[in-house]
Image (tube, rainbow, N blue to C red):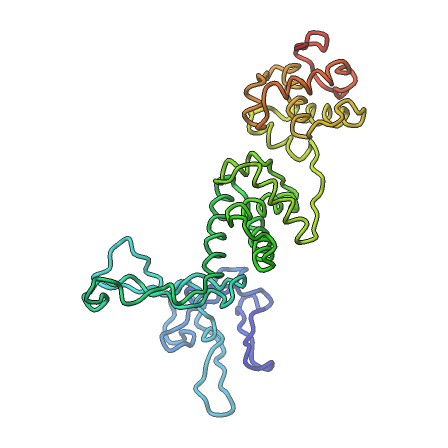
Length: 351
C-alpha cells in the first residue's frame, strides 16, 4: 500500500473500487495508478488530486490530509519525487552538447566521491589570458592519485566492453585496482598492466574466467607483463583464485564456433573423462578443451578444423594436435553413451 511518510497516522490513498489493491506510483507524472482497474489519480497544479473536474478515465475522489498545526493541506502525491533527469536548454546550445545539469553519480572509490566541480571549456575572451591560455584549469580540482585512478577506471571499462563483460566484473576490477594502487606494492609497473591483471583476476573470482590472450587482445600490454602483475597482485593482496577447468571455457568456445548443444555436451564429457583418466598430464585446460571440441566435432555432422578451433580458443594448431594425440587412443571410452555418431570412432582423424 502507498502511504505517506510524514506521520504514521496519515490516511492512505485507496481506489474506491478496489480498496485493498496496491497503488503503483508513477514518479515522473506524479500519479497514483490502481493495479487492479488502472484508474489514474492525477495531481493538480496545486499538488492535490483533482476533485473539481471529472475526466474520463480519472477518479476524482480522494482524501486530502489537513495537518493539525494549520499548515497548507497536502496529498500523498505531493511527496512523489520526479526521478527523471534535470535538463537545461539554451538557444545557443548545440545539439551535440549534453543538456544534463548534473554530473556523473558519486564514485566511492575516489577520495572526494568524484563530486568536485568540473569547469567547462570557455569560448569567450574572458576565459583566456593575454597569452591565449585558459584561465581556469580542471587539473586543480582533482588530485593526481584520483586522476590516475580515473584513467585506469576508464581503461578497465573500455577493456570490459570489448569482451562483453558485465558491470559486476568492472566493479570488482576497480576495487582490486584501488587496493593495489593505495598499497603502492607494484611500483614501477604501469597502471595499464595492473588494470589488465586486475581484470583477469576479477574474471577468475567471478567464475567467468578469460584467458591471458583474451585480456591481452583488448589491452596494450604484453601477455608476459600481465602474467607478472597477476602473480604480484595475488601476493600483495594475499588473495587467491580458483583453478580453471575445461568446463569454464567449453560453452563459450562452442557457442563462438556455432556448434549445437549435443556437440558441446559431448566435448564437455570428453574433456572431463580425459582429466579423470589422467590422459593429459601437464596440459592446460584450454588446450584440453580445444582438443575435446575437435574430437567431438569430427565425430558429428558439424565438423570444425583445428585452425577454426585454435582461433577461438587462442591456442596453436600444434598444441591442439598434441593434446588430441594423447586422448585419441581412449576415444571409445570418452564419448557419452547417448552420443549419435556421424563418423564412427575408428574413422576419426589420427593426426
